[in-house]
Amino acid sequence: MNFKDKVVVITGASSGIGEALAYEFGAQGARIVMGARSENKLAQIAETLHERGIQCAFRATDVTLEADCQALIALAAERFGGIDILICNAGISMRALFDDVDLQVLKRLMDVNFWGTVYCTKYALPYIQTAHGTIVGVSSVAGLHGLPGRTGYSASKYAMEGFLETICIENLKKKVHVMIAAPGFTATNVRFSALTADGSSQGSSPREEGKMMTAQEVAHRIAKGIAHRKRLLLMEFNGRATAFIKKFAPALLDRLFYNHMAKEPDSPFK
Image (cartoon, rainbow, N blue to C red):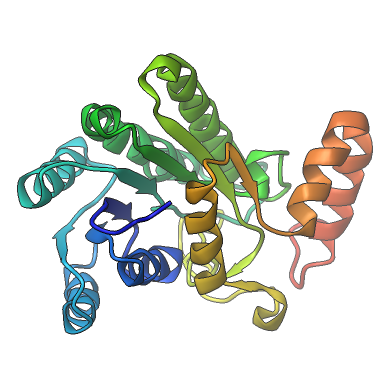
């Protein structure tokens, strides 16, 4: 697929995978529209994109607010005349046992990960239908099988995937492409800002950065997945193994997930 002059809207674009996506699609000639809560960070990225001759626009966007999502989509339509690709990347994580977690933490994850996707899709869909374009939900292996210690995260990703799968089916005759992208553990600041049981930020990660996929590699694979109009993009061995084992031995996968997460430093599992 040639991305030249395609209009790509990216949420959560101020850092990590979202920022990498802006540079990836910009380098391939796309016109970039970025949304995130940090206007200052978006402005810095936009300046770099402009220096590289890439057309872009941005707006401070809290995806938990329907009006913000509507305004971001309106900006893309007004500035560039439509939307070809919507990438719902904004997301937060958590790390706590359900026994201990404040239920407002789960609500927060649903508001960002699920409702942020719903709001943006609602207002972008008419443009995507006209363009026969693509909607991408950046999910996780936690959206394929329940991840212990991440109840709210898994729930929100399952909800997002079910929603987008239905959007795909409803739009079969309108030639809308929907892709679920499921990276494994990625070296981004999402892990550092993961919410704990009381809703405070984790502040550090129990995992080694060096063994993780970079945000740039994730962005490159997402671009290739869109080009090949993939339905589900599993990016590494753990994701592919999860999908395979779940089909034939889900109880085994339960134990594998439990044992894997229990090995984390300061694991909530005793």
